[in-house]
Length: 458
Image (cartoon, rainbow, N blue to C red):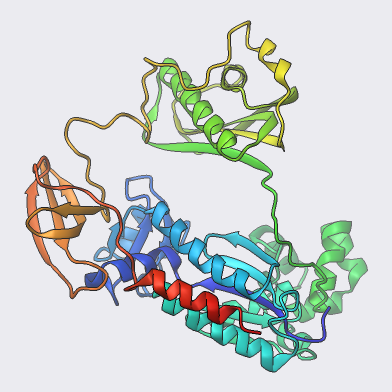
């Protein structure tokens, strides 16, 4: 472990919800929930105002609505979140070449590798400057943790939330960790936590006092050794700039259980084609095809088939997924289907198409196949989604507050305006059309250029 707190962990604050609040002035300071808004939707992110009511990520949206019935429930705008994430990651890479993204809104940075920090004072200065740069470029806030290891930097950023900076001084780590619950440590989930609790181990101090041999007996060799080291604040994991994908997959959850076997087969075929498009977009191929089925009773089954070599051929992957489906009992209906490919490689074994019953490889999904999921053709009447950007020739830019019964309600405002007025239209209003999101910060391009120059200073 290092002698200086030169590993930084950034975690953007309630990222998706914060983007929506920054984009929509009327939602600032109010409860916002982003995720699937249908009867089987799941919360992706809740604003801090919504968390007061007990709403949190991964909670069923139906439960969230009971806890916070007056919150704004919005569908995600992933393209916008990804573009803002790219801006944030660019700022991190100005600090160091070693940036390890964990998700769109979270990353580790090795400040030492970029000569951005050498000691406590310079690390704190780098963290404070990063937070200011993020606010200037995106209008959003992020919490920063600084420590001598990845584990402690992540713990520090959690303590910094929201919109703060916490630095853990070298030499104080064990005193800081000792009273914390065992669930604080990475790798200790609910099951491991309950197992340790039954053994009388509830804090990190209890872990260290139990000893390595006892933890190995309780948890197994690998987990026991790792957990004991973490309890002693030992973590030598490096910041890794490139994190290789282990699999590529797609899945859909259906508002109503699918019972028809033909329909299920068509869904699996469509998912296989979507998975292939993702594979090819990433320049990858894979050897193992995986089918995921969640049945009407919430039981989840996975089936896999490993090919002779890696492929990105849609016919091969489609037929493998169909064979896997043949082994699954779907009586009673299914609520979720998924197709994935693992065992990834950056090349394709050309002769694998022979597995496809002599059919030629297809570059695109077959025409005429019904498509029941998100990528279905546009219907004659527009489907307006809560939170969607729209534009009207008379009222300008706005966003959909809600729709139904042949009507759509829109609030007309922009990120840089005051809270706007609400109008209701017929859902087929001729002048109303989808629009691209607007920048959250004025003259964002100029700000990025200026921050680039500042970020290069020694």
